[in-house]
Length: 407
Image (cartoon, rainbow, N blue to C red):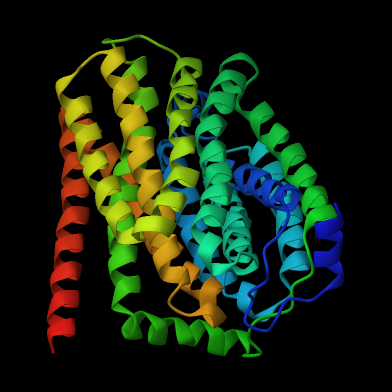
């Protein structure tokens, strides 16, 4: 605890860079990030159960999309605050808001009310992405990839185990009980961050409106940011397409399995947790671009497996490959963008993560359409196509970089 106490006593330099943080503080950030991001996935394994409680209310099918859209809005409107406000009270306060939003979801009397509450849950759950650039700012440059990887391993744990937890609780206790559990977890995370986070002064003195306007300038000025954002948006659309439809696929006549089994696939995908720190270390050593290419290729391979191997074993293998690929690309793309401007890491993350989750929302919506038109084959074609789009963007970005260097 000595290192953490010293970090609390000493403000960080204006550029947001410190000489690292202790292991306990880093693990606390990883845990809180996982708790936060878990909230945008609780509804996916429980979607069939929720729809059954609201018969005739088609709005229930919009719940996953609303949550993803809420997250994208929160990223755009809230994440820039990380550059212009003290991050510790910002993070703690956002966890408290998340707890309130989850309570509203648990008490929702209609499907449309739950859709609106899901929008707020998604927006407030962006506190996870306040923590990631904070961790990057605390890390020394030579360990930044590994630090981001550790925190992102916590994020992936939340993404995957949220489905396991919500699938089990939804099947045996009801979907409302799951949201009440989420309230308690959010409050625990608020306390954890209050106790462990170091103080961190703002890296920029610009006003909020100017910070928002600067996003367009950053987007126009940084081609690497644009490439990373488009690539991750396509890959995450592929990822959410799978998880949005999985429970419906497993409940169908081919398998006749419940939401708890769909949630168990989160445990299988937990193998991908190891991809985050591994990808970070590889990126530190060989460069993040190499890892991004590998992640996009693995995503395409996963959808080939899903499409051609129509069995539980095929789903298990595909989930492992998919999660490993998505997580590797995510960590390495973040490594790329955080190196672009150390004074604007929260705003860079705003652009990157907003684009990524808009892709996720689109993936959820289009996957629902693909499922209704072509069932699992249609979803597999969609997922594979999205991975190919990511690879095409990488090729175009690489060609542009070569052309620019040749000038």
